[in-house]
Length: 187
Image (cartoon, rainbow, N blue to C red):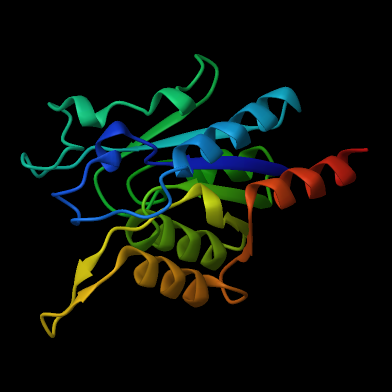
């Protein structure tokens, strides 16, 4: 069985400043919303993961409005929400146990950001034995300042992370391709 895992699709990750000065892929949340609608329509399992930063300055701190889910992906009452304080959706939550109890073997992972919680969670999911599909246009990256003091643009970070995850940890595809492939497998 296949499930959708939406990770950290929170309002605060639309802001620049705290996590980086620029962010790529402004349509990431919209594509997460398209995936969510598709999974709901097909009555396939959906799981939401929310980051509660322990850093009071973070827009994802529970005291800030940025901690709320993006309007495109608000969970329904029957959709499980897992709250975490670290980069990995599987650490400090019972997500793995819940997935395995439902005999879910394939995970579609989307959300924010690819260089933090998405990459960490994709790698862990793969290491735990799940077949992972990572949706490239339903995630985004911020620019980063390297150890050398150079600034690496968000697109460079984004594509480097996709290259690192490709094949070894996940199959990479876009929203349209995923929905077409799942439609074929359901028919």
